[in-house]
Image (cartoon, rainbow, N blue to C red; front, side):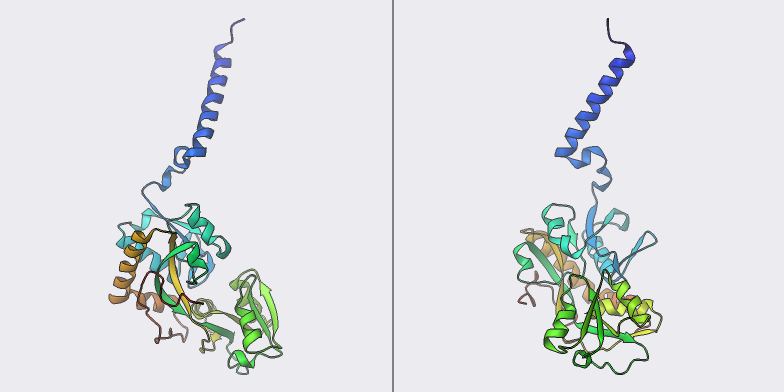
Amino acid sequence: MKPSFNHLSRIWRRVLAAFCALACVFTVAACGSGNEAGKIRIGIKFDQPGVGFKKSGTYVGFDVDVARYIARKLGYSDDEIVWKEAPSKQREAMLQNGDVDMIVASYSITDERKKAVTFAGPYFVAGQDLMVRKDDHEITGPDSLNGKRLCSVTGSTSAEVVKQKFSSKVQLMEQPGYAECATALFSGIVDAVTTDDIILAGLASNAHGKLRLIGKPFTQEYYGVGVKKGNVKFAKKIDKAIAQMEKDGSWQRYINDNTRGVKYKPNMKYNPPKPDLGETGAAK
């Protein structure tokens, strides 16, 4: 008995589906990701208010503003940017696998990371600092934390730096994100939060004056733009955009916009830094 037309149609649809699935192995764009064609894919943080934050379907923060500026100088409009979350532990893999074209995500330049990533920048020099409640005047710096409870994010080395170098009797508490640390501080569960000052400034800005920075940074963290290892030509174009951003006043405006309402000023001894393909401050 000959197969019916419907039976043949079902077989044909299955063949097409199998072909498309196979094609997807070799080219993602062939089956559903064509919306990224001709666009630039940028990795940012989604959970750092004031730096990189996803808010009601939009993306805001200092790193986001920097990334937008660079993208425009590279010839991309805002609607040609594809934002992708870049968790700290996944940044190198995202670049190596080609998931993103560049990463602007409080990405400190280190010699170890430079083995796997080519950096442009730096575009900002942060310093580790402390954030406390507005009315707390007992904590004056990292050396005044003995017996206090200090919060940092799981996997971060910031709190360990304080314990090892400044206050050996500090009690450490970890949270999955900085917003959770800020909540713990506001509610009295911890006495202070530590991480890079620009991140703390963003958190304090969101707290509407109820939290404040100590304002005594005790490290230097050189933020760079990560690109795929070996793509020096692309990194040089990004360096040129960063230099223009610093020269035309955009850099300072982005700092002001994202730390509004907070007494925060970057350490002008190091800022704004001269972009040099990640060479500045790389030895850490």
